[in-house]
Length: 271
Ligand code: ACO
Image (spheres, rainbow, N blue to C red):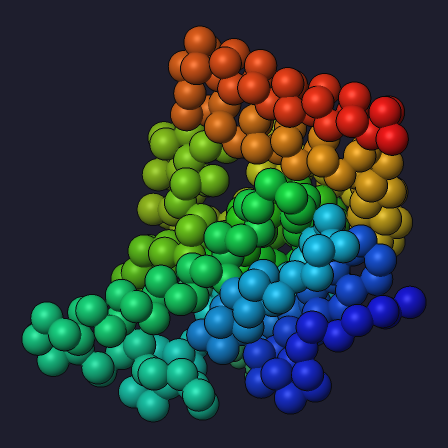
């Protein structure tokens, strides 16, 4: 049962995005199936707004696509001289002055905010992917903590083939997961990765039959919610810090986090 609306119907329609909160779970549905859930700047600004408006009760964010695809990536109309309604065009606005680059930098930074919050320690983000996740769609899945794939899922980092770079925060998780050499091979060939290969490359935590995708995500959500929220958040933060830390530094962080947990548990026990 949907309990709260984060977006108005007008905002949802303009962004091609539905946001439904039910208890501790926010489900975000990319909802332009007739365009294979192509996303615009408005989609990413709205995603950022959702992150900023997240009710404190939400612990899990599930992102999925309506119809046969997760997302066909950026709406290719964004590259037309007119751009898309409500967004400054990406092409044809650069006349060479330094102020042009600054404005574009600000727009892309706003778009990136739609992806960055999915790493927040107090939530677990799950991408439930069926069909294609191309370009920005792949980067959105990469921004999530856990990827659950239907067996027909397909990843592709298409940007270099279009003369672009991936700029929606996907390069770091990609390299963290597959390593720089495989990331170079995947991006610079812009080839398609099947669900099976995605699992081998650790780009998928779980691959299931298409008919079982929703059930597998529900089971995962239930298991995640069975762990106390504060312990989950503190552990996610520790795990995120581990990759960039030395052993001694990380061991010290573990001690600090554990003291925080034990203090909270002792206070709760004392009533
Ligand atoms: N932007 C705008 N419209 C799109 C996009 C897109 N990214 N992707 C698909 N559509 C439209 C198609 O033009 C088509 O419209 P029409 O019905 O008016 O002809 C409709 O969605 C359905 O697309 P099909 O190609 O018929 O669907 P199919 O399931 O056969 O293929 C696929 C899906 C693989 C996603 C294909 O549409 C595709 O390759 N799309 C382009 C992907 C792309 O290059 N994205 C940009 C990546 S770079 C980045 O994201 C930064």
